[in-house]
Length: 194
Image (cartoon, rainbow, N blue to C red; front, side, top):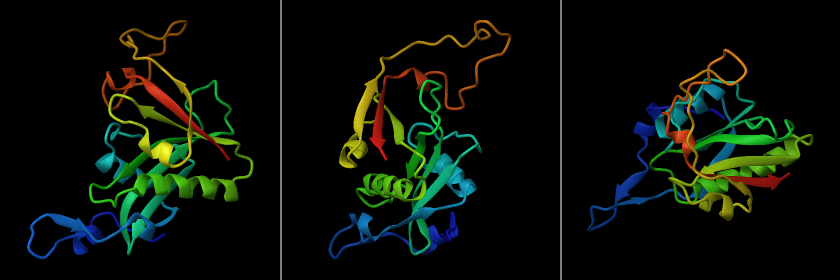
């Protein structure tokens, strides 16, 4: 997939004013997007610009990166890696970030999720399942429901004290790039069998 980050987005505006009105109307629909693998640095850069809750993301390691584009303009990106929870099998995959541009067409995230699941089924036969976490503080899980994922578990809101070293070691906790309260919210783990 040949994509650019900023120049093409400015060169081809997605919205235009309809006759007699000043409310912008999208001329692009999610079914017109082309989905495919992309360079990981592109996905990381656009995640940092667009992600609603966790924009400060690490450069890697990422096993897979994907983009949704139309005419060379990127509207959504996703980053996948092995599950962060050590209790989950490491041959599963976790959607760590999915970020959409503010002008992405309606239904882009759910169509993107569906496409990625089909891509993994076709191209990674050794993978058994995909998982993702929804932050209940800010999201409803609509994209997972629309894509046929199921709820595997729910956690409660929790308070963490990361001011001291980890128990049993002198190592500090991993820093939280997005703030100390972000990871405390209740989460829903969504899953889909591949």
